[in-house]
Image: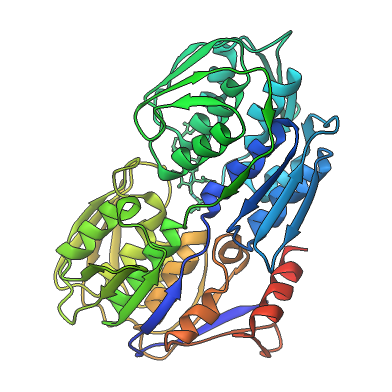
Amino acid sequence: MEKIIVGGGQKLEGTVRVEGAKNAVLPVLAASLIASEGRSVIKEVPVLADVYTINEVLRNLNADVEFDSNEKAVKIDASERLETEAPFEYVRKMRASVLVLGPLLARYGHAKVAMPGGCAIGSRPIDLHLKGFEAMGAEIHVGNGFVEATAPGRLQGAKIYLDMPSVGATENIMMAAALADGKTVIENAAKEPEIVDLANYLNKMGARIVGAGTETIRINGVEKLYGAEHNMIPDRIEAGTFMVAAAITNGNILIENAVREHLSSVVSKLEEMNVQVIDEDEGLRVIGSDRIASTDIKTLPHPGFPTDMQSQMMALMLCAKGTSVITETVFENRFMHVEEFRRMNANIKIEGRSVIIEGLSKLQGAEVAATDLRAAAALILAGLVSDGHTRVTELKHLDRGYVDIVMKLANLGADIKRVDENGVVIQPLGVEETVELNEYITE
Ligand SMILES: CC(=O)N[C@H]1[C@@H](OP(=O)(O)OP(=O)(O)OC[C@H]2O[C@@H](n3ccc(=O)[nH]c3=O)[C@H](O)[C@@H]2O)O[C@H](CO)[C@@H](O)[C@@H]1O
Ligand SMILES: C=C(OP(=O)(O)O)C(=O)O
């Protein structure tokens, strides 16, 4: 079993560059299926396990997909007749595979995808996606572990109110509506930067979408979409993770590509905790403090505090003076990392949907298991300030969403390495070997 071994006590200093956003590239790659003519070229694509997975899903549907991991570019030609069924093996690996439903349904009037199950952070149903398709005239059948959507003729534009501003439902409905007959209005839509990026890409493909980034998105359906070129936005959660790395180690890191407007809630909480965040031409400089103050956080849909930064902030709160409270309102069960922090001597308890964190715990290195992607990062962050060595296992979660995090942290001065089951160091490595390793990890 591979592990990351982190030694505590180093201040992190230097510059790190943020990759393209995982949560933006997955819907953008799925949306490429709608183009019945021309080829799409997507740039600034992060070399991640999830990207390999979605590429496999698209290939399996008969799209022609080339991923140049050195160039960080994906070329997709979906102009041939596509299959309309995505099997369980992909959806099980990555829930975002359900994002092919909207594009396929819009283009062919049929899509069948394995029903995603629950996962470590909650049950995560897709009822809002399906209600949206139904409002546009699709018939939905759920059975035998699959969801099948069928639309006799073209989807019809509709007025759709989302009970909650689901990111995935907004994306799926927006993609379906791009090719529907007439006008669709999505109310109480998600406002995340990834929604805006997807709308920008769809508009380059020929769609007519306005209002993305606000709670009302209006889409005038068109008859056909074309391949287009697109540069992915930077990953705000990777940026936020490095911001916490600077804060927790009392370090000083320039995070190139970090966009303040995408991170305003995170910046404002860090500032409350005595961390400095300074705008520079290349990105954001984050300077830690030896007097981290406690604070309270409630996770909310954007522009509220992102649930994907919750566990990393919990690591920082363990080092704050005083008691902090985190309330998770987006996912029903995203506190699995609390038990792992406890193994590191954290003084922390769960009360319903909140976690109470007593600061200034003397954290101790321990063997801990990543329970989800962001928990993996949070445990590494805690390891950076723990006494002794922390060994983090279950790295498949980490590899879904962080490119070369070991090398990036090592370059900033962290005492960190990744070892294989025999204890042989496999990271940090040079860029080429790391790309090869990522390919190997994906297989
Ligand atoms: C690939 C991707 O972009 N993943 C992100 C996306 O996930 P994802 O798109 O799955 O998240 P949603 O915004 O849809 O989910 C938010 C909440 O709504 C619930 N819900 C959602 C859809 C639905 O049909 N019914 C329903 O009840 C979910 O169970 C969850 O409790 O947004 C989340 C919230 O910012 C992030 O944490 C994920 O990193
Ligand atoms: C929860 C996350 O991703 P996903 O929705 O792909 O599981 C995440 O990026 O933190």
